[in-house]
Amino acid sequence: MRGSLRALPKNGETRMRQSAYHFGPSVPKARKTRVHRPHLERPTIPIAYLELLIEILAERDFTPADLFAGLPIEASLLAEPRMSAVQWTRLVLRAQELTQDPGLGYEYGLRMRPTAHGLIGYAAMTAGTMREAIAIVLRYAGARQSHFDLTLEEHGNARKLVLRERFPIPVMRTFFYENILLGLARGSAVLLGKELHDFPDCEICFDTSEPSYYAAWRSRLPGLRFDEPVNAVRFPAEYLDYRPALADPHASRQAIALCERELSHALDRAGTSRASVLAEIEHFSEDGGYPALHDVAARLRVSTRTLKRRLLEEGTSFITLLNEKRTRDARDLLTRTSLSVQEIAGRLGYQNPANFSRAFVKSAGQTPTEYRAAANRRR
Image (cartoon, rainbow, N blue to C red; front, side):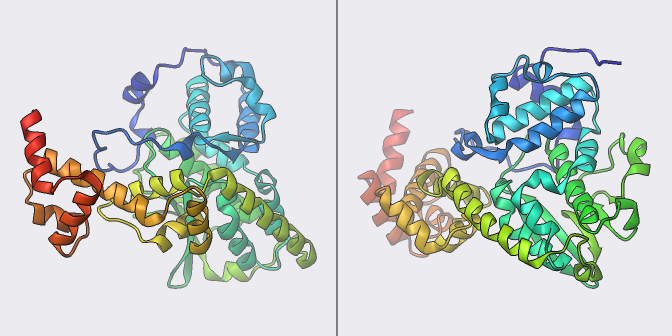
């Protein structure tokens, strides 16, 4: 029976009406000044992920027209190779509005096929061992999903594929973690020609509490653990030595060569230059510090040499962008707080307050004290 269609609320109303299902642990309060993140508007996410969502909706008698209705997104997006993170989030939010199914993330993850990941899925399916397959996923995941970091960590005789968001996810956070982690677990089973229930020692960890809809899905899911410190897929270390059912080293090498090309194109699409570097600097500063060049290069998945060259081509440099951010933060602290100049210098990473004052004069044309006095007079 087809679910009822309801108009999607405007963004502000939507956030107020979302249940706790959509949100993870609390994140630091946002700054008063809204941060523009251009990378969220770039088409970086494969349209194959949207096609799977449409397939699931079709089985519930919803059409693509239903999905796009009321959204500032044209259905012609389906003819494009990729979509942006903003578009994907709006479409997922709309899909749950249509289905009224809080377990949609489970359904999506259980339906995820390795082939939906394109060349990366093929390279992993033909790898010689699961260890090699996971190494392939870790290296090239950024070409398919650049808004999460995936790492393999050791925990005694177990291993964890740990998934972390690169920026706070305010809406549908649980959906994304559910579908990605379940997709990783199911994909591993498919590589070995098995089903998820054939891996009783495989567990999926979530940093959120057990949701009310979990009981209805329990029989279809592997072991799930809630209120964990990280979001991860946990499995015995011996799984790394298992051989995929379609292992073909020659085919895997060919696919890896194509994956390298796709990764290079993905980096070009992401624009690993001024805008991306500014976004990464902002991300680090929200956590209470500033990154080094190699930190940003690693997160953008390029070498420091390549990053410096691309910034130079745009007429800037990493240190210039870092100093711009420090100056903005300095002005903010000078006008919003009563911290001393020495305390502000320390917060901004200057060991010597005199160095901070000189840098501030160079960028603002005034000493920190003069700038604060002028700001106070304008109030």
